[in-house]
Picture 1 (spheres, rainbow, N blue to C red):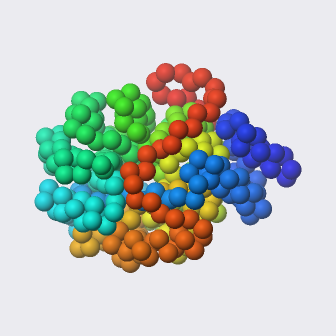
Picture 2 (cartoon, helix red, strand yellow; picture 1 turned 60 degrees about the horizontal axis):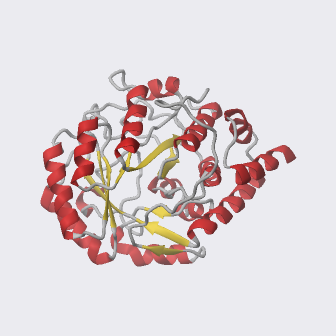
Length: 365
């Protein structure tokens, strides 16, 4: 047991462990080890960000998706999904309301909906940046071509979130249809960084067929890729997917992984996700205490929030909404934090890390 605590100490100092060592930590997870890691992670978080939590305004622009990922409630094959697509006017209205509420980052998230082509998105981004030049625009719209990513960046997009889902190629194939490839997902992430985006990745915790070895690979990938942001959350099954009967990921493992990620990179932007708040009423507060420093309340029209259902029982009304920013402030203050609604850019932190090969980062699983 003492060896596990020593690994946490070394991660705090060196910001790097081997895949084998990450796996040993996950295999040996206990409440005491998780508490120790959370204490270290909180200390690292405060050293860079103090007691501030960044807030993003989330706009879920469409639940139409051409893909058929096996875990996702808005997958193409779910014919019971009530589809919607926000108009440009509706999206701009969300931004206007968000700006009045004090938000200075807008996150446009959606399925891979062909309707949102480069011409439409570039026009939309340009209008947002012209109306709110002090705001950051973040996109989370899946895999696109290099030309598309470049066009959106040149139009003014600042950040791009593309969850890699898993750094284990074999597991990736079990979670996705044959038309999607692990190699292309990783190439998209590499391309986003090359273009100049503040790039975010992320993965599920407790996904079907996932092992601690797979999660260790995720930790090593994030450590080496050095994203600006990493979004992780527990797998929660959706009834209209092939994985409907699988158990959800656990709160304890997700919180432990948040702490380990914070220790790999104290400057990382690390959200306490809606999924955390879905599996436990205090999940997001516990996420902040474990090392997270971002929350993303919902700015989408109330009429569509329930329809963007990636998993069952998503919280979609009440204190997770952007309109209840004061509720969120009180919840964060109750654990000793305060929310700030500026752009919330990543603060610099450079740690010495081993050299990595160009191209896809190779982590052994």
